[in-house]
Length: 101
Image 1 (cartoon, rainbow, N blue to C red):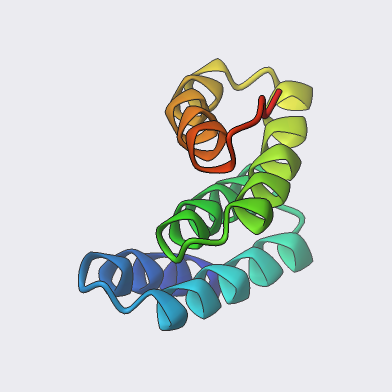
Image 2 (image 1 turned 120 degrees about the vertical axis):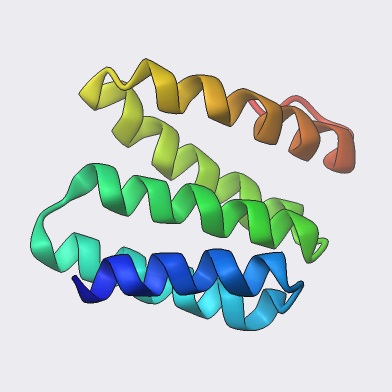
């Protein structure tokens, strides 16, 4: 339950444009999901954290987190989550000037 709280808190902080605090909340959520054994929750938190990192102008970190989430989503065959990742990876590609996948 704590991981869900941290994830929702991160969403609220990101909406308020408090990106540093939102990043911490998403990372705490990822730790909680990982300890609980919830791989999809962990991957979702990593994906949201990567969106925050991209907004903070840190595309390399965003790409690393997004690729980790992508591996988990592919392993679980979670196509809905993968379709949400494509715009994020396209944005990272645009910022970095390289091909992300």
